[in-house]
Length: 607
Image (cartoon, rainbow, N blue to C red; front, side, top):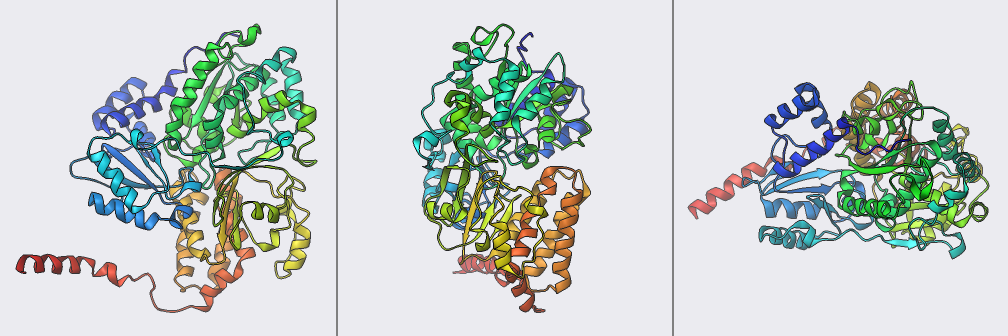
């Protein structure tokens, strides 16, 4: 098979938009006309693409574009004080640009730094553990001509725990090519069989068997096949892939090459979320290193016909692009909207060709399995889930960061490991995950008995619930957020709902309209204006969204709410008990703010 030397032309659209955004700080109407003509698409279609992505602007975003993380972990940190400091120092509000166009200040959702909050991006360079004093100093240095990259570095990995040496899979010494060289003794079919025997499944959250996916793709004949690494780690509270790509980018590249060998692909994309732009140079440098060593390119390792190369494709801020069909659309230079699955990507994916899409952690696991041997790997973990799992920990604990644990660890043991402070609620698997209570603490983190959602029980008997659920594993996508018994849960739920309202791609009514209605209903409950029927509506609407949304992300957008209503009914009921006609949304200070400002100005003038 002949190696594809350059990506198909349409895939360069996002790169061109990024080049203009970085150079001009916005994409002007004249730019749109030229690009539309070049790619032979209408201006309207192009504007639809630009407006879809959060980080493309149609007005000046400032020479220094600041994105402040407004996720719930950030808000439980220094967010409010940091936001005030930015606004005070710049004399603008969030969403505005200074009159001299030097600074633009914007909010954004989780940027993969939940263990180092409060955080922000300045020209896509990460600034962590922010305080008002740090904000003042950073802005002062930028005004003096310093560049953002000279004021910060790549965020720390913060790896807090790995198992015993013989059971560590990911975070152990790495030498490029060790796993890849094992392919000299394996045929593509043998490699696929090895991956199937390992029971490796997708680590991005879907948990589809990796070997089976590769086999399906291999069996679809085509003149061209693609490998895509899904590095669009947009699930709030998740940052394991960031750490993997920073510490061992070669592992990811090796995994992609192995997938290519298995299915007969000759070109690959790393779809890197824009929030991880600061890792792009490091990944591309490692790709060049692999090429120089004969580990990428034509006839890799001297294996005739094993031709494979990789490019990094930068996203532009869209949570939904974590869904595989939306990700494909984005690479193709379109709006990142999920498609109906008439065909699966392994049949017709990128540019209509058979395509493998795997998560960073999934791909990194394959070369480790080959280098340590399948027999040793199968001794780690549980019967259903072999190996180890990477978990991103944040929130109310003394040791936030990355944990590599052996599948099978009890939840209560894990809470001790991270030194959780009076854990009350665990948000497991991010905003699209489920809420766990103390009744779940005896469950293990594993894939055993995965049909948990089909188990029937009554929550009014929590002892019976705990007994039944203790036999059901908790399958983790990688996010673990801890909230202690001093936290008010309702603002947490509001933050999550607002996130899904903002991040819905808008293509289907259940997700687009349903989450908006949920946010309004939730606000009504929080303001103590609700009745019992409003809680019934919450549950009913959440179920409709879950059952009828177009893509997996829409279907999981209400998981947290359904599980919260089940396990923390007291949080909702206390709002009903406090029902009042008093309008808590009325903010007297905000209403009189303009009046106070005018009076202060008059007093300055007249002494």
